[in-house]
Image (cartoon, rainbow, N blue to C red; front, side):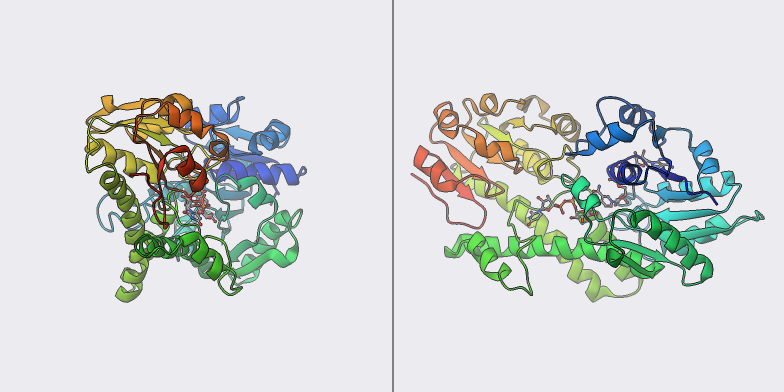
Length: 458
Ligand code: NAD
Ligand code: UGA
C-alpha cells in the first residue's frame, strides 16, 4: 500500500484540506479530482475557484510539486491507496425524506467508482459530512463482488469554518478519526493519524469508532447553530425590553461553563452546512422513532427562519410600512465575512422578501456578487436589482442601508459621506451589529440593530 493521497471532490473542503496536507507533508503526493472541469481548470489557474484567506499562497507553493488537480478520476483511484471522499451531501429535494435527509447520490457514485476501478488495497476516508452509519453502507458497496481487494473505511470529518479555513486546518482544536475496531481498522487509523501528526500534536488526534465519529460531526454543527439560535431568540426579547443582547452575551459568556464564542446575535446563521446538517439530524432521529429529539433540533432551524423574517418585518415597519419603489442598499451578501460563498446566506431571503415588497435593491459585496446574481436569478422583478461593487455608489439616493455581512472593510467606510448621499430620513439596519450605532445615530441615521433598542430621530 502506497502513501499517495487522492481526494474526490475539489470544493470548499476538498481544496483547502488537501492543499494543507500537501503543504505540510512534502513526501506525500496529493491529487484532487472532480467531475467539474471548470472547477479543476480554476484550481490550476491564477484565479482559484474559492476565496479563502491564505489559500492561494499554499496552493501556489505546492501545485505541480506534490499537489495536483485533475478530472482523471480513474487514474487517481488506480495510483493512490489513500482516498478521501469529499463530495457534496446536500439536503434531498425529492422522494423519501425530501427536505431533511442527506442526498447521498454523489457519495454513492464515488463508492461504486472506487470499487470498479481499484486494483489494490485502499483506505477510503469519509471527509464529507454523512449520516451516522453511512460507513456501513460504504463498506457494503466496496466489498460487493468478487475482487480480492481489502477496503478499509474511515471517518475523518472536517471542522474547518469558511473564512478561517487555513488557520483552522493549521491549528485544529482536534482531528477526529473513526474506524473499525479491529486490526485492519486500527492499522488504517494509525496510517491516517501519522499524516496529521506531521503538524498536529498527537493529543489532539482523537481516535473513535466509526459511528461516534460520524455522529460527532452532525452534533458539533447542531450545537454551534443551537447557540446562535439561542442568542437570537434572546435578541427578540431584548428588543422588547431595553436589554442589550451584546451585554447579555458578554455576561453569560463570562461563565466558563458557557464560554463567549458563538453568542453573536445576528440576522441568522447561513452557510452550506448548519441547516442541512440539523435537518439531517432531525431525519435520523425520526428514523429511529425519536420524535421528541427530532422536534428539539428542528426548533433551531425554525428560530433561524424567524430571525431572518423578523429583520425584514422590522425594516418594513420602521419605513412607514411601505418600501415599494424605495431604494435599499444591501451591504454584504456572503453568509459571513472573508468568503465569497453565499450558500444559505440570510441575504438571499432578506433580498427576496424586500423584492416582494417591490423595493429596489442595490447589492454590494467584495467577493460574492457573482454568486448573488445566481441566487437571485429566479425572482420575478429582477429589474429591481442592481449589483454594485462600490458601497458608496450602492448607497447613493437610497432610503436605507441593510448591512448583512460583517466584512471588516465596512467598518472603515465614511458613513457621513454615505449619509449625505442618501434620501432622508435615512435608515440603517445593521444585521450584524457591526458598525458603531452611536456614531451612525450622531450622523443622522435612524439606527436599528439586532437585540438592542432602536436609535431614531423620528
Ligand atoms: P462543494 O459543493 O463545494 O464541493 C463538492 C465537490 O464534489 C464539487 O466540486 C462536485 O463537483 C464534486 N463531486 C460531486 N460528485 C462527484 C463525483 N462523483 N466525482 C468527483 N467529484 C464529485 O462542497 P463542500 O462545501 O466542499 O462540502 C463537501 C462536504 O464537506 C459536504 O458533505 C459538507 O457537508 C462537508 N463540509 C463542508 C464544510 C464547508 O465549510 N463548506 C465544512 C465541513 C464539512
Ligand atoms: C461551520 C462550523 O463552524 C464548522 O466547524 C463546520 O466545519 C462547518 O460549519 C461545516 O460543517 O460546514 P461555517 O458555516 O463555515 O462553519 O461558518 P461559521 O463561522 O460557523 O458561521 C456560520 C453562520 O453562523 C454564519 O452565517 C455566521 O455569520 C453565523 N454566526 C456565527 C452567528 O450569527 N453568530 C455567531 O456567534 C457565530
